[in-house]
Image 1 (tube, helix red, strand yellow):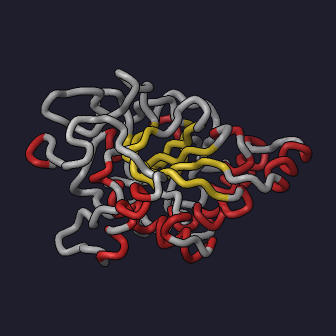
Image 2 (cartoon, helix red, strand yellow):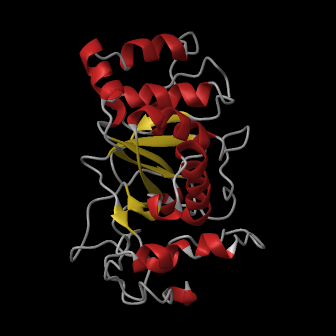
Image 3 (cartoon, helix red, strand yellow):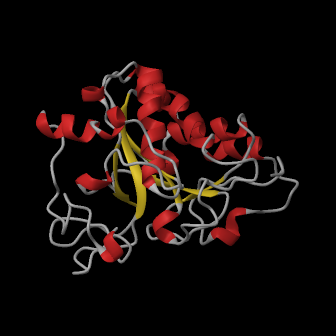
Amino acid sequence: MSHQALLLLLSIADVGALRTPLSASRRAVLAGALALPASSRRAVADDSSDIEVYFGCGCFWHVQHEFVMAEKKLLGRSDLQITSRAGYAGGSGMQDGKVCYHNAAQISDYGSLGHAEVVRLRIPPTSFRAFAEEYVKLFDKDGNRPDQLGDRGLEYRNVVGIPGGGGSPLAKELVDASRENGDKLDFAKGKGGDPDARAVAFVMDTNSHPFYLGELYHQFHDGFAWGEDYPGEYNGITKKLVKSNMLADAGCPNGMLGVGIAGL
């Protein structure tokens, strides 16, 4: 991906508006587009309380595993301290008080609501850059996600949710993480129900596009690829969290059994 391709974290009309004349450099544009008062930057840097963020990159099973490992590696968290949860975000809210995976009854279907599969975390704001780097590493050198040729459509689009969206100083950290790890991605301001575009991640404001918890059977699941089975201790985190009243069924059809359309 050319270093002269323009990154916009401003309001744009569509994916086609991502690129402008090649004479504009990403670094120069970002310096102006993401500039915030020093007081705002300090407020984020000095805030010791955890923030809620989410990352989407195709099927959430694999993504959750990678971020669970990141929580353990970067923050030293135990199984009961893990905050990574599979779920849905980026769409137009919920129906009947919930957002659900595809189901035969077609109740609160996340795809119909314009949501993508994501993984939610609660992390210190000072750790966001490190987690952004883990996210970027999920893509290959051309900006393809692991299941780019398999799962496609708005349910699998690339999204990143942060408080304040593109106007947050965390957005610049996200862009910097991408640039310094292969410059694989372009970024656009998510508007909700955005398209699935290769090598483009939509930046969402978690205040206006919150996270909705997925079904229990989706949590700490084996990967989507053939033979991508994780250790039993990883799969068992669900039971630990449920037993400790830290994870509960959201009330969707077959939320605990994992039997929806075609048994998925």
